[in-house]
Image 1 (cartoon, rainbow, N blue to C red):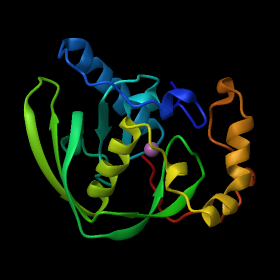
Image 2: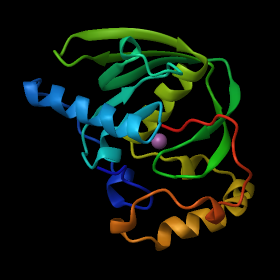
Image 3: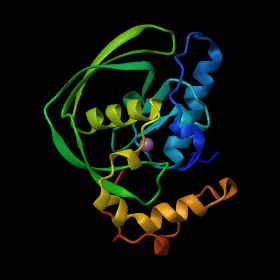
Image 4: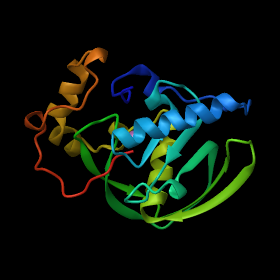
Amino acid sequence: MNVVCYPSEILSRPTPRIEKFDPGLRDLARRMFEIMYEANGVGLAGPQAGLSLRICVMNCDPDHKPEAELVMINPEILELSGNEVGEEGCLSFPGIFIEVSRAQHVKVRFQDLDGQVHTLEAEGLPARAVQHEVDHLNGSLLIHKMSMVQRLAHRRALKMLELRRPAEAEAPKAAEVEEPKPKRRRSS
Ligand code: CO
């Protein structure tokens, strides 16, 4: 299964909370991890898997160690502090990376697959990923973070995405992307 890409309408829709914690939810999270790993991402939100549900999965470990897997259901950001500009990509915007200003530190409350409530504090990449995924669940996307200059710089890649039919939902070829090859860039 491919990641749902911009400009698919489902990505802009705020997701409803999950109220039922049944075994199907576990299967769904597993499938989301598989899609995320296949796309080499650090996070994936429900709408990117075609499901308008308030769930996201993350794994910020560089080797994707299973113990670093995190499933967040109904996440809610409690606190944001500090500020850090960093490069960010999104699996729904293949080939596009922009500098985004985010809080450096985040405190988030979420439920796990059993419905248990947890609070997590994160910094750096995991904090960025949490903010990115919660944005997804609210229907807010990387394009909404773009300045006019960034939109102009990526207008070709955005146009390519807009022109693609859903059936062609695979990453654009390198030649279609205007920027140089990244060192190690990760999207979520
Ligand atoms: Co994303």
